Amino acid sequence: MDLSKSTLRVRDFGDAIPYDWCQALMRDYTNSRHSDSSDEIWLVQHTPVYTLGQAADPAHILAPTDIEVAQSDRGGQVTYHGPGQLVMYLLLDIRRHGLNIKQLVCGIEQAIIQRLKQSGVEGVRREGAPGVYVDGKKIAALGLRVRKGCSYHGLSLNVDMDLSPFSHINPCGYAGLEVTQLKDLGIDEGIDEVAKGLLYCLQQSLGYNNIFKARNVSNIRELQVIHVS
Image (cartoon, rainbow, N blue to C red; front, side):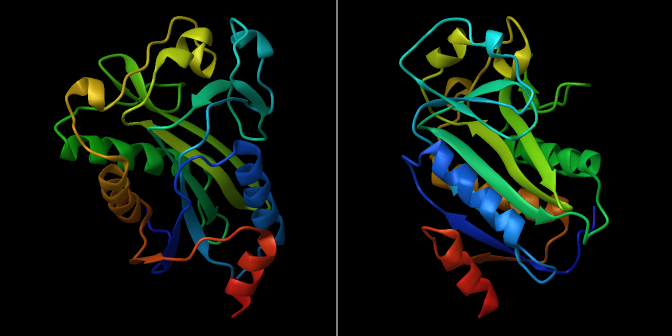
């Protein structure tokens, strides 16, 4: 998949990031971007939250908890985000690079599989169920939205987290689907180390020449200033 000989900007927002704030910033950036706007990946760890996709069935939340429930405009059903889980949001101009959503999903999944392989873990795809699985258990979830030819939202990879909140939902809408994480597979790697490797795999899978670490922002106005300069 050759996206172009271009630079991918990466912003690491760190941990304890509220979901709704980040979703609003992604949406604002996508709505305001133009043909010269940079493609970006945002790294995040969210505060505990269940997110429902645009057409998700709330019945997939099986029991009430004290965990926040947020409505998302991504595709897919319900999932959980929380500390110890690596979330990467991919804000890419796929139309500029001649990609469709299926090709983008394939490229993301391949990058995750390659990153897992680096740690000695065999990840696989599952037909009709986006994401990556290890021994039948889901370790990485995908949820995307395309607007004006540009993608936002992205992927989550379970690294070292409390998996118990997944027991209160049908993950991604599948009853009885089990989840796993790197820690439970004997992989003792921190979020930063996992992220660094996955970024490289995404760069290779999506065809970018360079990765540039950009400064973080607090609102869309700051992003607009950065991209005009």
